Length: 514
Image (cartoon, rainbow, N blue to C red):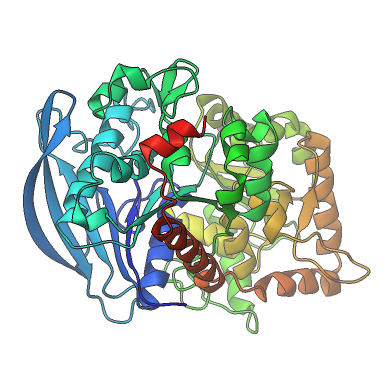
């Protein structure tokens, strides 16, 4: 690592303060690791009504700002948190809470992205997160000069644009490099063109293939991709996939291919303190790879909770997932009968599309001794599934990185995955002849392929000497953030070198790149 940097992350989630999916886990763990390395790290997030702020944070009120908004202004309020909890990673890391205190109260709602009663996304999400990006930069400008502005996913994608346009004259950002990380290209933030005016840009900038235009609408993700000095995504395989075809690029593959020289795939790590079976307060019986008695007890406890026999040779197959097409729930639907014929039991935790929620409820109703389903998200149960299951199923259609396969290996739970994105980068198919590998991998997104991979896993499970080896192989892998943080250190150094050499992505330069 070089000299310590002043780094500002902008994101819509940050574990443990607010978590909907894996984004919060990644941002929280990366920021904590960077703080441990001596960087000065601040994470800006919206001040959601449901934010969970414990006693481990010192709090400071920073006041308000008038944020330019179309032809007028909207008021923002800021609070600063500083991590003071002893014995936790990331001590000294700061969090900037960005609130909207105007009439519509963008963040004073029951959900983060969607109304929890209907499951429908808020219709003004485009405005909410556009405001967040602009206001966050004004709040960050109060805190000093920055070396790196690092925006995450489409909710923060306008930040690199604003740094090079409306905020370019601020001393806080004049020497900063901008980095944009794609966590999931399938969610892009596409809105009607009126948001361009709210962002402070004229209609003359909205023309076919302009930095802001995407099939007649404004695409937040595209804005981040075009304006950032450097781009990253969360695994090397996914970095290749999103440039290759519309199946993975979702219409932005051309933009990404043009920025190929600026795109890096950096595999996520996991928070090995929070996900540690030897010290996990959310599981009933801690264990480690040299003392697996606790895992057997966790398996029995999970079986009992699900209404399954406590003592059974049938493996438990876990899933903790969003119930959406991306996660391969269509394969579960297509393979339902075959799965219920296997000598295995299934535990599923998650919510999502109504079609798949109903599928899981129906299977649980007709096969209560074989299939258990719990809707929503339950953090303790998520940990208990990782600890108590024998296998963990991830049949994703695409998967930028994935975290659960890494959690699973750490907890001695063997992953069964489709070879896509980060799943392909992190799970090696087990070969019983060489005894190498730590999971079971299938190639094509087909129900029969998935079922056959589970069958292979069940065959190995019936051979204790092989099962112990595949499980031990997974538990020995280091998935900590240290190597990932090395990659971001190199990325930041490259971005700063380009900016200091006059290569910043300004409005003029990105228009010239058409």
